[in-house]
Image (cartoon, rainbow, N blue to C red):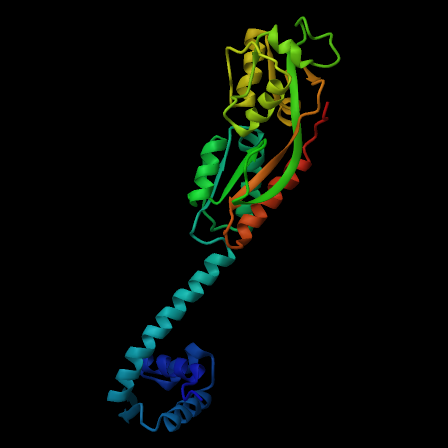
Length: 303
């Protein structure tokens, strides 16, 4: 059984630093008799004196000097632990590192979510980076970022994955385009009409090109574009078509543009990814949950 009572050790520390029972009692918010009693019990337990009295003042003994020197290390460490607990409770100094492709997430959702979380975790540091799908996969896998957001189909066996929403491919065409009168966008149209396409090398684009290859369709592509907002601007400027995701299209559609469903339903998942062995972290869980909630609450209609 330990002979050290932490409460009494704390009382000893305050008495040592003030050299006064009266001053110590004020700091500890205890009565003077209570402080004196704890000191006496502590000395009885230790089997040696900690203070002598000279002219009404307390003077530490040699043993008290040694005990204070060692116990101060413990109290300093405890203070650091308490500081850490406070940081963890309100976010902490370790940044939450997030990466996403340029999209509705980065332009709308992530700023909203971060603003909400800063109220809950005022001391939390956030670090955001733009990164395309393959960059995100590498960064998350290596532990350089805590959360990535990816759309399309990819090998995610070595990641912790959270499904956020389902999305699908659609076509965007100018209202004055030859195809604007069509009810659906047939994939064969891609062989005859200039269309802005997602890069085939990305998980988002590779899924679409797999379908084209399966149908032996060779699209007329001279421009590929990673960002949906940029693709939509190309549609406006060049009066051409674009293949984009439905959620972004519905939120970014211009007055002179039209969203057309494809003849085939090419649905995919928008996901949050984290390192497979990532420890539970409340702020990470909250961030992903809020992004999911914000995405599901978006006011859009799937064509």
